[in-house]
Image (cartoon, rainbow, N blue to C red; front, side, top):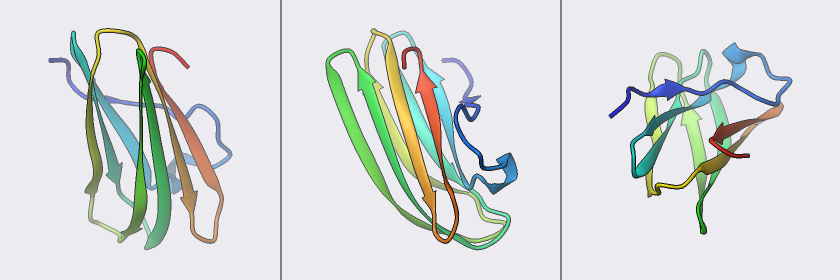
Length: 108
């Protein structure tokens, strides 16, 4: 198994230190694992949605998070079986602020 790969922000106007939810990806020969990690420098409320497409399968999950400084939490841990290419989109909306989008995977 390969080590987790932090995914860079693809399309956003939100500075990196203001992105409280990040994705870590582990890819194996027959699956992909996406973990959403919440960590904030200040207290923040955020809503997130992760959509993964792998082969003919599509999975959509999301939630709300209240993040506090100094505490990192796993918000979502999703494993999708696939030998095919996969793609994903993480949308995050920060309460009282701007949202951002991360594009993940082999195909977009």
